[in-house]
Image (cartoon, rainbow, N blue to C red):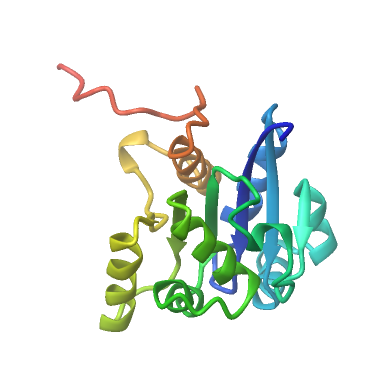
Length: 192
């Protein structure tokens, strides 16, 4: 393997910018490959929210797979990766992962990551959560996944939406050992 691989799933929840920014950050990192699965609803959101066509998003990744391609490399545990991020993660995808449905490539790749004891990070983008959503989040967490709702860190004193998004994306990458000096890290309360 030439470098470390990270799978990125972009599903139909609002917040396509999180997945796109992850791809951009991974593209800029030497020694890292991104493997993208962009669902049909995810592609619709990329167009609606960012005016990006499927091919524009797929060009950001080192490899892109069709969401129905269950025979893709990332559908097997023998394909080595550091794990997977689903950003944003729709409640439908969350339910499929929580119940190991493997009914498309996003949920199959997530199932593989969990069964191989690799890191799975999901950015659920739906509020408010109902009880089924919460139970599914618990189920994924109990299987070893990490639920990372993209909530702003106001201690970082973001000046705009882009800084809030960047902080979340860089903190998600922290979970895979990809650290950036651009993260506003907590250093304790300032003494006055």
